[in-house]
Length: 337
Length: 249
Image (cartoon, rainbow over all chains, first blue to last red; front, side):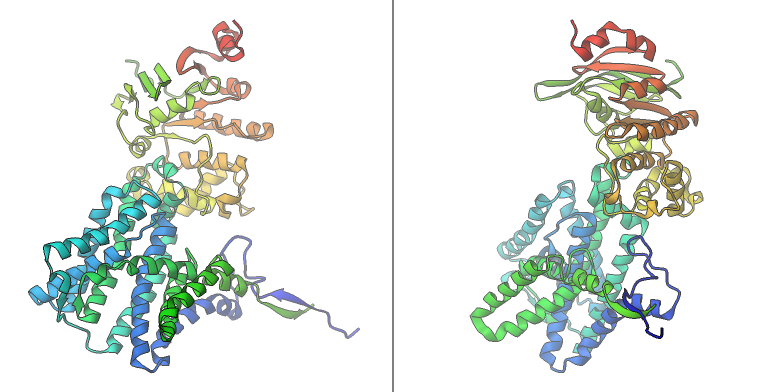
């Protein structure tokens, strides 16, 4: 009777507690199993710039990171607060122009303009979005989509802040490595910071507002105040992206109010997986790389791009990250019994 | 004014378009009692609850709580005064676990103000409240997502959400509806215990038999008007109530 009986067992067996997302870790294997995805994400993000050699691709990664910021902001507001905010372009525009005006008119260095643009821009954006906070769903989306169009026209018509020419000659970063290693750690901090936030008590209140705002009102909580804080946070993220972009190009113009900044983050979020926070970052990187690779196809690029996007959306509706997560938890190995 | 009156409703009116949902309803709620509100479907019971808790603005008439005017205050402020409600259709936060559902009221300014730093860890307090109301702690029930719960648990979760706010007055909007007889039997002692702990309770109900066991007074509504208010025994005998319910003329 030397024959050994073997069966397949899931890797998470023994460490996964019955309830969702709780693990009882007691061994190095368990720790490795649960922390591997996070470690892969962190290291992957930090190593990408070293892996690509050409300057062009490093620039592409930077742009992807800017979009990742906006996608994070969108995902946070849409999935954790229930505010569908298409104000990405509004945030980048306001952040970029504050930074640009401070730098070109008053000569403030960029280490000061970026923080000011982040906070000040968030205040301005929140004030503008405040009247429509009681609105939900599509109505909020429409209003937030309208502001960038409005601001771009105002700047054009009144010929303020450089009008259609924009403000050239802003301070730029010393070199590409500074650009890269400013924004990449910021993304990591933001991703994990937001994930922490939505599991803290404050974040629980925000998620409750998304699920059922009436019950939150009946629980002695002023939902407008909490939504305002969430919008402030979301717009601060967007304004940082805008201010960063202004100093990246050394120029601000009404193209910072372009609708790409509103629409692209949504596509990135859908591809990466709604509500995962890591997903939008990965989605933004993948989509930006795709659209660059397809540049060779000329006019056909848009067709390929749309097809790939449609395919990704249709094939796994949950998004990339939830799909990978599911597969990861299903890994099995042989054990002897 | 009687010092024992904790909530006073004075001649409130509310119309939705041409329909008079509430027509000149007045009543006093005495401290520590259980007041039942019954009436046929569409008689304005839930609208009355909405008026008291501020979810609907009254056309005219006033609501006072211990001398303080409630009319015109937003719902969250009324809840902050300790007058809380359950919803007829449970409104849990589906994506959160039962325990985290209670973190929301525990994070409210009322709780922060009244007990502040002494509260300790909100999760632990939430677990205690849930256990009190019948969520089996050992069976991981408090950790399960609210979306997985059957109706009976959702109703209890509604009640737990109110209790977490440490209220003076709880308005239960059809707490027993949708529950089986055994679930109701389990729920009655909970309600009685709350009353014995000094809470004042309004129960809007369709389950008349169970309500009459525990209510001290019962108010009957029909077509938005209050048609009777008395002790349960007198209500059972009342001709006018029979008329409203059975349509006997």
